Image (cartoon, rainbow, N blue to C red; front, top):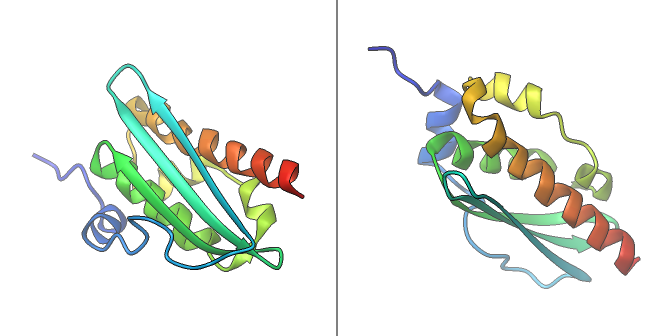
Length: 126
């Protein structure tokens, strides 16, 4: 049987550096969550914003290794970047990078939902 997880998924799943809660003190702390009711997958994403930068990102995931790896990848890519990172998300590219089966697209779209919520919160706070 073929291994369902590529090396990128294994790395993120085994080394989830961004799992947990925010640790720093920030100008703005944002938290959003989304749940996929069919299989009970859930993502909670938190961001600490300071001086127009996503200074820290953390996640909590209830779901499969692909979803954990996707949340970790998202945090790695956006932490220490501009707040415009809340608006930039290419689910197809992420799924390709992690070799996520098409059947799990709904779970991956949870990340899009939480990013949109973080963006909206940031816009309303500004």
